[in-house]
Image (cartoon, rainbow, N blue to C red; front, side, top):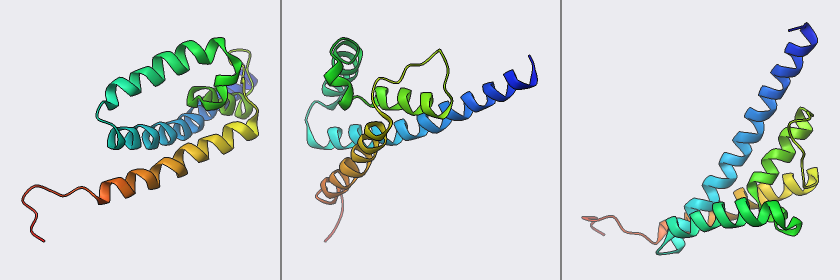
Length: 123
């Protein structure tokens, strides 16, 4: 592999790592809030991942705006452009919506966690 090929591979690896970290934060905030607000978080999580992101996100272009998977792909593609990936949402949408998922659902989860009481707690 030439020096240029290694440099692009390293850049791609760093792009994947950075975009994955953003996606992990967005998914974690979303699924934590989902688990605290519903009685069936696993079922709703599977519906979101399999139906919304897996099926509808790849068929209906409008649903991509609410798909963390597409944000991660777009961020990776912009950090390290490659023929392997094709970002389907714009960069501003990917950045803003990742922040909305993370910043929007984290306080919601925190607020919900404050209402829980620990077994054996005396107050």
